[in-house]
Image (cartoon, rainbow, N blue to C red):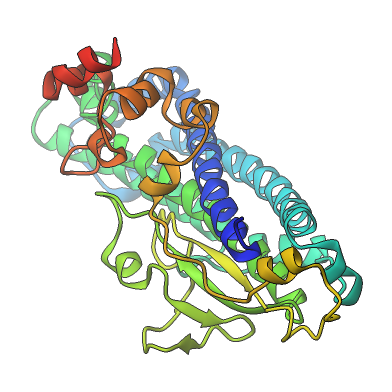
Length: 370
C-alpha cells in the first residue's frame, strides 16, 4: 500500500500535468485575443503608412501618424491584462481548494483529529499572484512592457521598410507576416511568443505561491518539501539539477545539499514546469497515539518517497488518464506500441505530430494497431 508521501508525490505530478493543460488553454485564449485586432491593425497600419510619406522620418512624426495604431495596441494589452487578472484570481482560489481537498483525502483522519489542517487566506494568495513580482516584474508591469515592445516593433518595421523603399503592402507584410506562413514571418510574431511566456509564467507563479502558502500554514504537519521537475527534452539545467532535492518547509533551506531554492519551482525561470510536493511528518514525530491502526502507522512513516520520473508516473496511470494526457492515439502507442513518453518529442523538445511519429517509427503504429 502506498504511503501518504508517495500518494502526495503522485498527486503532485498529476496536478502539474493538469496545470500545463490549463496553461496551454490560457495561452491559446490570450494569443487569440491579441490576434483578434489583426484586421483593424492592418487597416490602420496602411492608413498610417500612407500618411507618413517616404521623405522624412522622425520618432515624433511616426508616433503622430501611428496614433490610432498605438491606441489599438494599448487597448488590446489592457484587455489581456484584465483577462489575466481574472484567470489568476480564479486559479488562486482553485489551488487553495485543491490542496485542502488533497490533504483531507490522503492524510488519515486519525492524524487530522490531532493535528488540524489549516486553511489559507484567499486574499493572501491573490496578493502573491498580483502584487508580487515574477521574473522581476508585476503582471501589470509585464503587460505594459509588452505593449511598448510591440509598438516599437511596429515603428521599426515601418521605418526600415520606408528606408528600403518598400511598398505599403511590403511594409505591412514585414510587420504582420503572411497568412500562408501562419504570420510567423512577421515582426509581431515575437509579441505572441512574449505573451505566451508571460501567461505560462504567471500561472506557474500563482500556483506555486498558493502551494507554498498552504504548506507553510500547515508547518505542524509538513517537515520538508521536495522539488519535482518534469524531466524531458525541454527541462532546463536549473530544474534538472534540483529534481528531487529536499528543502525545509518554512524557509526553503537546502537539506543534505547546497543547491539554493532561489525563486522556487514554477518561478525559477520563464515557463518553468517544476512543482513541489510536501513531506508529511511521521506519526511518531506528530506524537500521534500508539493505538493507531497498524496500516495508518505504516502509511505515515515520514519518509521521502522513492523518486518517480514523469515517464514512470505516466506509464502507471489508468488508460483513461493516459488518453486524457496524451490523446487516445499516442496513449495507445504508449501502452501497445512500445513507445516511451520521451519518444513523443524530438531532440529540441517539440511535441511530434502523429504524422512525424509514424515517419519516425512506423512499426510502433503497426504494433499498436493504428
